[in-house]
Image (tube, rainbow, N blue to C red; front, side):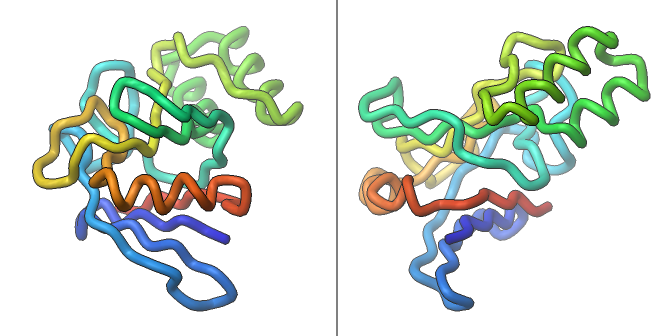
Length: 151
């Protein structure tokens, strides 16, 4: 099962066996266009991520934490001098070992799919859903293989 988020359309689609299981409206950060580059930029990442953390009860209800920053995010940031070698290697190691990457880097972190409402863009870079849609997605959490976030 794949979760695909189209940022421009503000839409999340759950794909299962080459078909759509359901779609939902989403809200993003206040700067929704372009890939996330740093902590506090208000952007939602773009790329392929995996769920690394489940929260039954969080600040905005149920939440699914994503393994951002990913290797591609780290590679780009390292090549541009936005993170050092140690941070770069730490992110790569976490992904290679199937662990949550460090969230306290200059790239930001703690990117979730969570509840809280999808009527306007209001998150700090997360993907927010309406509570009923989040409950439906959360129920599928163990079947989700990847989360693809597209521009």
